[in-house]
Length: 64
Image (cartoon, rainbow, N blue to C red; front, side):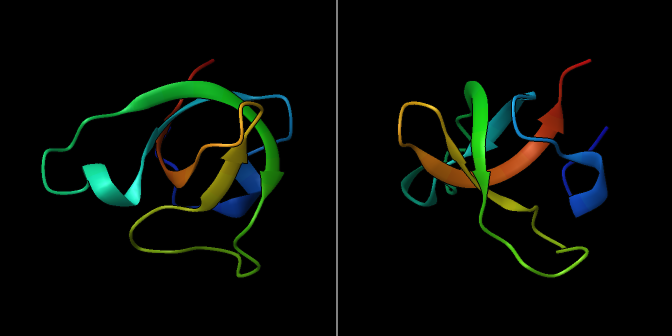
């Protein structure tokens, strides 16, 4: 799953995100969602979330 729809993401889900400073390189960070920061139902670049370690970024994929 991609991370463009807010309804696909749940608190506690394991996801891959791209941090703002990693957007050029495309480096992803894996973590567990602690908060969903995007209010809209979808976003073309991915829903912005905060991971349990405090890292903020946009979801690129959701792990099942």
